[in-house]
Amino acid sequence: MVAPLDGIRIIDWTHVLAGPACSYYLGLLGAEVVKVERLGRGDAMRHRGGTDKQRAAKGMSTAYLTQSAGKRSLALDLEREAGRTVFERLLKASDVLVENHRPETLARLCLDEGRTRAINPRLIHCAMTGYGRGNTMANAAAYDVNIQAISGLMALTGTTETGPLRTGAPIMDYATGMAGAMAVMAALMRREKTGQGTFVDVSMLETAFTLMSSTITDYRLTGHAPKPRGNAANSRSPSSGTFDCAEGHISLGVNEDAQFQTFARALDREDWLTDPRFADPASRNRNGNDLGAAICDVLQSRTADDWERTLMAAGVPCAKVRTLPEAMELPPARERAFTSRGPDGFCGLPFTMHGVGDQSCAEAPQTLGSGSHHVLTMLGYAPNEIQALADQGVVSMS
Image (cartoon, rainbow, N blue to C red; front, side, top):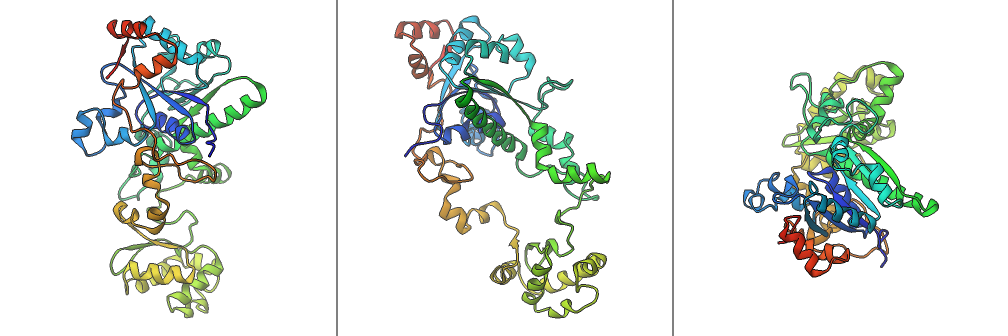
C-alpha cells in the first residue's frame, strides 16, 4: 500500500478550522504533518467549538479533535528569535508550509512568502486568508460566518420572511480546506516537473464564489440579482424542492420531462400527463403554483418515509429530510464508514482510493507540545539543546 503523499512533510502553522482541515486532508493522503502552535494556549480551537465543555477545558475540544489526528504538536514561541530559528530549520526540512495568518503578521515575524521560499526554494508556501493577496482587504480578519455574509451566500439562504441565514455547518471553512489541499497537490505536481516550489494564495471569498458558480454566471449574463428561494430547488422546476408530507418532509429533484412522467405515475396521478396545465415543461412552468399545490395535496396523504421508499423504487430523485443522527444511520454512512475511517476513528476523506493504506490506526490528536521533543530530534537537535530551548521558554513539551 503506497499513500499518494508518502514522504511529503507538511508544516501546519494554522488555527481554527480551514487551515487545520487542509493539512488534515493532506495527512490522510499520507503526508507527515507537524502542527506548530503557540506556547501556552495553542490553537484557539482547542478551547472552543462543540458541546463538550470538559474536553474544551482540557484543550481538546471536539472541534479541535475533528482535524487533528495524525499530527505532531510542536509548541513554539515564534515571537522570539530562537523560536524563529527552530521554525526556519523546520522549513528547510519540509515540503509544504500551510498557514492562515494575515500578511502583516507574516511580515512582522519575517516569515512572509519571500522569506520562507528564500530559506527553501523547493518549499510550497500555501497561504489561506479571507480575501487573498493583492487587494485592499488582504489584511482583513475573517471567519466562516463573515465569508458567508460578505460573499452573498447568506443572502441566498432563507426566505424573504426569515431574512439571510447562515448554513447550519461551517461550510466555508471546510470547502476552503479542500481548496487548499487541492492547490497544494497541484503545486507538488508542478514541483515534480520543475524542481521549484511556489506560493499558493487561497481565498475564502473565492471559495465561496466557487460554491455559487452557476448563480454568478447567471447574474453576469442576465443582470438578474438572485433572491432567496427558501427550499425551492436551484433548477427552478416547480416539481423540485422540499415538500410537507403527512409526517416529515421530502426533497424532490424532478427536473426533466421523463422524471416528471415517472413521478406522476409513482404518485398514481397519470392524469397530470394529459392535463394541459402540466402536460409539458413549459406548461408546468407557467402553472407552477397550481402544480406545487397539487403535489402538496398528494404528498400529504402519506409520511415522508413511505414516499421515499415508493419514489426511490420508481427511480425518482428524492430524499426524506433527516436529522444528522438519522443520516448517520443511512446504509452508505454505515457501510462506507466515513465518520470513522480517518485517523484514530475520526471523519475521513469524502472518497476512497484503491491501493492506499488504512488511515484509521494513525496517531490520536496530541495535547499541546507533546510532539515537540520528537520534532526537534528529527531536526537534529541534541538532547541538551532541546532542554535548553525548553528552559528558555522557546518550546514546551507535555
